[in-house]
Length: 136
Image (cartoon, rainbow, N blue to C red; front, side, top):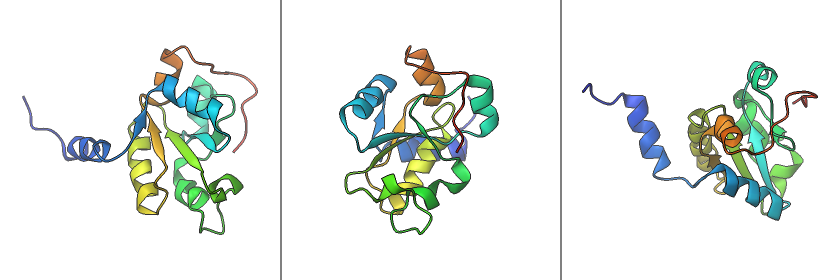
């Protein structure tokens, strides 16, 4: 068996330090708190091809830290709330894990990751919409 790649080892190490939610727990969290938001970091091409989660905020990965850092002049209003909890997701739950680590390093300690990403959400039978895609 070949040795584990450095990125796989890093991903595993990061996952030991963050909270990750399975799709149904993430859905419950967004339904029970007005300060908990799903954050879709996938590129537009993925959303166009696979759909999107209604109500998720679209913040592509390349601007995520600027939008969710409450001290940034480019942050979204939601990030400035006192109890803001972003649940970040990508397509399969890899890039979003590393994004949460980055947000944590900026002081956004409430950031969490959606296990399995968008595909995990869809596989859990939760609502996904294909048409009428929201714009970032």
